[in-house]
Length: 180
Ligand SMILES: Cc1cc2nc3c(=O)[nH]c(=O)nc-3n(C[C@H](O)[C@H](O)[C@H](O)COP(=O)(O)O)c2cc1C
Image 1 (cartoon, protein in one colour):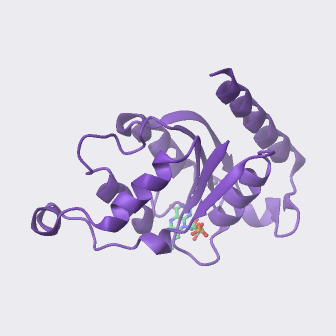
Image 2 (cartoon, rainbow, N blue to C red):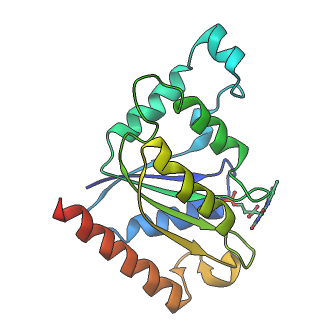
């Protein structure tokens, strides 16, 4: 199984990047393609820019990465209750590629974490409700609250309840995908 993994953050020390790498490592025998949003920095989306210059090549490249995946694993950073600007800009650009949906009908597992007790649950809810309108098949979501209390750089998730919950969700996703 080919997994496209990314954090919805351009932060070099992104906690969502740490979480998505850890979650991806729990998929045994998967081929992981880890993307960095910093490699897809584009002008801020505007209809005028799209009309003047078309859709940037980088948006097309991002879409090609999606096309090659069997599963998309995203851990979203929450900024003021919503997507980070870095993620939203890329999403806006590739959602404008004509004659296709943004997520190309791909299965998705959405994650989020934050240092706070709500663990990015607002952005997670937003994405869970929105992505199906953009051709995303959201199989499940997982939020890790209070990242600094529940995650260790070497060991990953240290809170057993959250760890078991994540593992169960991953097992369920693997079964769903292998049924197809
Ligand atoms: C502009 C800004 C807004 C933020 N808003 C929220 C928020 O609404 N909810 C939240 O839980 N954390 C919020 N945070 C804290 C982020 O969760 C924290 O910076 C986290 O590290 C972001 O994830 P990342 O490390 O993957 O980029 C905010 C941080 C910034 C810089």
